[in-house]
Image (tube, rainbow, N blue to C red; front, side, top):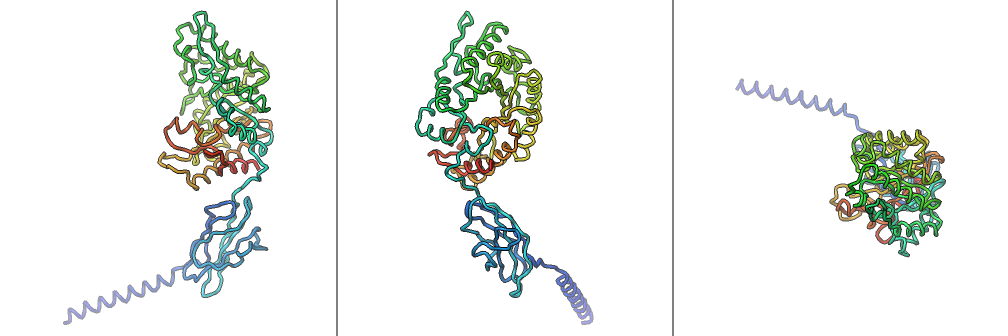
Length: 453
């Protein structure tokens, strides 16, 4: 019995010590007594959703929403509004308006101190009288077109309302203009598609950006299979550039002379047929041919991934600096084929500053924003729509920050989603443009204009 009594006393002592220790720990626990408000979510033109971190033993919360940070006045219905949960959808608001909100808990019926103050701006809806081109100052707002669409009344109505500049998506590229080269090195040209676009833009008083004289993916068979000397090859290229630029002199305001000359993730020139036949300085030669044909036309170098690929940008800037030193270049096109996640606004600003420091004209030349990043989505969700609008707003905000003297144009690479090159090129459904398949304005349309305000 003595043995069991000893064990019992030990257990009792251990339990007592443990219980007292727990009581001490409980006494030292500190609970938050002021709620913490989170950033707003699901922001729309007339509403947004807010939430906050709950506090221990609160019987409820009181919510304030105001148009000023001092809360001298309140939005109707949101002055100490009683809330039982941890979130609330604020409704009946004005678009493009900044609001402030705060919350406090109720402990034993007594309000706590206020939480932190959070601000949120509701989404922007442009007035009906505002268009893409009217929202821009000191630069063109352009769109990529083709001969079929400029003959379609639905397209023409939107083109003429929203844009003041056009770029031929494919019709003015070399492979669509050169149809053959005979044994005497005479070149056959087909101007019908290019003429149609130039004539349309001239009639409507729109700016024309020529795209693109030299591109490694648009080489006619007559040049791909050319068996003459390198000097003959170069003479053909000179004839083509001279003839094309001269034909559209005083009509085409600017040309992408060379397109996409730098290898991805590298500073090196592509091993294109032009580099192979004309040498390492083929860019300077092509730009000189264009300058000789029309001393007044603006000459651009154009490339993609110039924001997200620092190596490629470095290589392009090396070539750009050579052209600037030879007085052969007026501007640079950043293509801006981007997505809802990348690049960041800071990355766009950094890359653009590289051009501003060189005092050249800057063209965001081929803007579209992919939304179906994993290729698995079959619908364009509201979440993706708002994310796309946010990214477009970042693009136009950065472009608008460029000094006026360096602005040239911001061009969309197509009008509506089912026109985009992305789905056929990558065999994936996407919704990358500012208008839906029925010519309706998307959230991204508002984002474009908002970034320019």
